[in-house]
Structures are given as structure tokens and as C-alpha cells.
Image 1 (cartoon, rainbow, N blue to C red):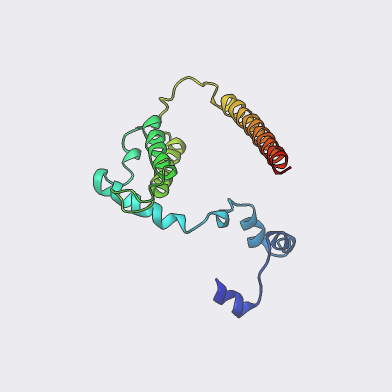
Image 2 (image 1 turned 45 degrees about the vertical axis):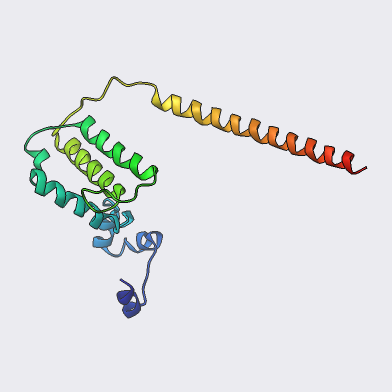
Length: 166
């Protein structure tokens, strides 16, 4: 891409491309399509590594042959996400980042959702969204109280040190 820009000297923003699209029908049509240019392409090879392990274990696109459990893939993604959050970088089985396994799980789940090859075995809709908002608010309030207590303690210690010096 950098070489092409050097050769042509032209680099357009999406806004500029949209302005030019009236004169170029292909550009006009292309701009209206899914903006795949926004995907971070560096994630795809990692996902492909994990998908290769899956192909070896189960066969490629096996979820299109038999419906899959939505919960199984959500749980697998969550296990990898938690491992990554806990400081474990590399999944032993795939030899690559846990985030790549999360990506693979989500790609499979989304493909199965899109192609009608998923069994939605999630529990009845709960209150997790509201709970997360409530807990975020509680955490902010607790942090503010803790900061106020620390500030009060530091002020009291400073006042005590002043008295001792006299």
C-alpha cells in the first residue's frame, strides 16, 4: 500500500472519496458496501492458526454440517478471555494468543448465527446489562469514598507531624 501511495501520490479520506463518487460509479458503489477496510487485518492470521487447529481436530466448517451450541462457543471464548485477562498470553494447544481463540470462537458463532446453524441454548434473558451498570456505579462510588478517606488520613497525618515538630 505504501508503495502504491508513493507511485500515485494520491491518498483519499473516505469523505474525499465520497465527494468524488458522483464522477466514478464504481467508487460510488464501493463506498456503500460493508467497510471491511476498518478490520484490523493483523488479527486474521492469528485466527487462521486457531482455525487450522480446529480443522485438524474436527474438519473445516463442521458447524455448517451440524448445528452448534451457542453456549459452548460463548463459554470457550470466555475461558480464553479469562486466561488472557489473568496474564496467560499463549494457549498451549494452538501456540498462539488466547485472543486468537476468542476471535475464532466468535467467528464460528457469528457464521453459525448467520447461516442458521446454531442452537440458541442460552438461558432466559437476565439482568446482566443492568447489573453491570449498577456495579460500575458502585465501583465509582467506592473509589471516590476510598480516595476521600485516603486524603483525610493524609491530611490528619500531615497535621499530626506539624504538631510534633512544635
